[in-house]
Structure formats: structure tokens, C-alpha cells
Image (tube, rainbow, N blue to C red; front, side):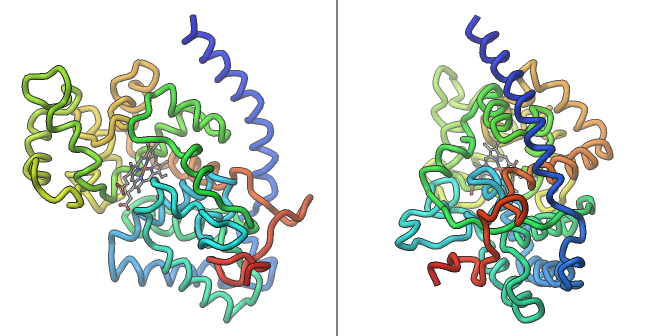
Length: 335
Ligand code: HEM
């Protein structure tokens, strides 16, 4: 009964949020900076991201994750970039889920180049969105248009980040609820989780699944493929260094493809929040479909990224809650 009630609440939330998110999206536009006399805004971001990824391909994954973590907390307003200040003493970047985010210097470099060409014009929030879009394509994924026109926020709190970002231990129902609260559907949650096709985590995040797992003789979580668990044990010895890196996709770790779903159906994904998408009856079918049809997933992924990038955006019209920061790490008032 409680489960039925939760699903009814979720359905009501979908209906309420669908209308508000469509309204928000309408305020952004593809090529916004062309209308602001900054013809090369997107090219400048692209050039900076390309150079950074050529230098260190692993930064691509972090830029994609940065957009997700920015948008889920205070909306897509670059609140994740703010450093500690009297106004925001414990900012989002200090929250546990954010301490492993890298690539802030890539955004700084793009911003510095943009300030030279188009001063006070391009928001840090748009730079994050464009950088994530470019990181997908530069890692071998699909290319897509990213609407722009976001303003930067002035508020950033680690507590909000901790409560708004999903945990890797979340169940399907918890993940669905957290995405719905942001105006994203369950299918978009499944689709966006496919970003775990690139990037990495550390041994400490997975030790409890491969050693001493409760109620099993082997000590391995039975939802993980046993051979895969042995491979993970080799990467992460029981008494070894738990900060060692583990690829999220062991087959094609740097390629933005649908391998995440192929891995998932054979029990080769790392977090319980990944596994549940392949085990729960609510999500299993869509996850399997994404494993069988890469083209379909690519289209859905691009659409879902654009939708996620419109969460609670601040725009100049109809209100003035945002600004174009001059330095992405500091609000203009805090400079
Ligand atoms: C569905 C809920 C999600 C959960 C619970 C989750 C959780 C996590 C965790 C725990 C990590 C490892 C972080 C670390 O050890 O440093 C990670 C990495 C990553 N996540 Fe997610 N994630 C979710 C959804 C997403 C979404 C929607 C995206 C983007 C669209 C995304 C993109 C990434 C990427 C690319 C990485 C690799 C980062 C890197 O290598 O630096 N995740 N995620």
C-alpha cells in the first residue's frame, strides 16, 4: 500500500513538474550568444575543452558529471563553482559527493578566454553546459545543440548538495523520486545514468560489494558477476590502497557509447544505484532497450542532457535573480 502511495505521489509530481520545466526551457535558446554579439562563444569553450581533454582525457567524465551536480543543486547556475566566502561559507564544492569533481580549471580557462573576447557576456553556467556537451562528443559520443542564456547564481551550500544529489546506494524508487523532483522522468534517469560509460571511481566506493558482503559465502554481492568481482578484487586488493582508480566501464572506459547498459545486463556495473536499474522490474526493460539500441539511446541521452540543463535556470527575463560572474569562483558582489 505504501509503495502504491509513493508511486501515486510520483505521478502527481510528474504532472506538476512537466508544465513548469517546459516553461523554463522556453527561455533558453540555441545560439543565444550570437544574439549578444559574441559569435565565437561556443567555439572558444570548445577549443578550451578540446585542449584540456587532449592533455588529460579523464577530465571529460568529470565535466559531464559537473553539469549533473550543478543542475541538481539550485538549478543550472554554476553554484558548484563558487569557492568558500563569507556569503557562502561552506559551498557545494565542499560537499562529499563533489570533492572528487575535477575540471574547475578548464571552466576558469574558458571564462578567461571569453572575458577577453566578450567581456561580462557569457555566464559560467553556460560554460559548464557547453563544456559537458563538448566532452560527450569529444569522447566519441553524439553531437547535439545546447541551448544557452543561463545566468549565474549567488548561493551555494554544501548541505543542499548533500541532500539533492543521489547516493550510489539509492534504490530505483529513491532515484526516480529525486529525478522527478527535478522535473526529469524515470526514463531520463535511466538514460542519463548511461554517462557511467566513461570515467572512474575509487576502490573505497566498491570494497563493501566485493569483500565481506553480508550473507554470502564468497563475500561478493550476488548482484555482481563473479568473474567481474574477481577482476575488481585484483584492482582493489583487500588491504591495498583504497584510493586506486577503477573504471566505471571496464570494456571501453574512455569511449562514450552504450557499453554501460551491455555491462549492466551482465552484472558488470559498479554501484548499487547502477545495478538496481537492471534488477528492478520498473527499470529493467528500458535499461535492456538501451543496451540493444545504441542509436535510440544516443538520441534520448542528448535530449535528456538538454532537459537536465534547463533545471530551474535563471534568465534575465522575467526576473533578475542571476548575474554574469566575472570570475566563476566568486559572485560579483564578493569580488
Ligand atoms: C542516477 C544517479 C547517480 C548516482 C547515484 C551517481 C553516482 C556516482 C558516483 C558515486 C560516482 C563516482 C564518483 C567518484 O568516486 O569520484 C559517479 C561518477 C560519475 N558520474 Fe554519476 N551518478 C548518477 C548519475 C549520473 C548522471 C545523471 C551523470 C551525467 C549525466 C553522471 C555522470 C558521471 C560520470 C561521467 C562519472 C565519472 C566521473 C569521473 O571520472 O570523474 N552520473 N557517479
